Image (cartoon, rainbow, N blue to C red; front, side, top):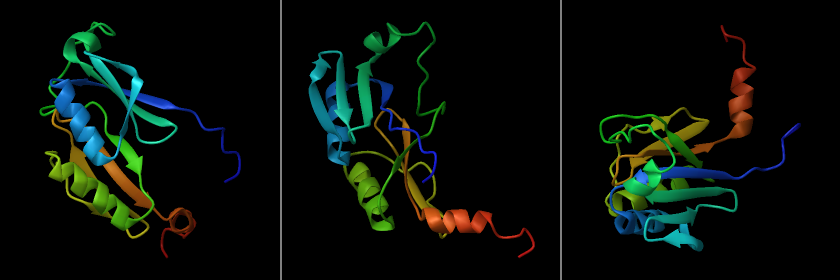
Length: 147
């Protein structure tokens, strides 16, 4: 892909009500704990070399902001998305999340060139898991509107 910037890392910080249960959930989905960044109030887990989630108990999370921590079961401030390599991989990841106690808050999306499903973790944080055929997606954008 032309003009693609060098990879950057992302650290998603999430407030959780039960740190141990949340760590177990994310491990079941496929994230790997990094014990270099862990204590009794926080745990970092990695989905890849560039995508990390930092789970923080409410007290620790509150030390980073003066804003209230919303109940993610009732509100949505962000929708996080992880890519997968195929439709089957999307299904496998979401099925792992459901087996680990997550929920599927939204219906699956199938646009032909893109397929996605969602899961919510035990605290209600929504993650979309998506596969996209980039060539087909770009080709569809090049079609005339009346085609």
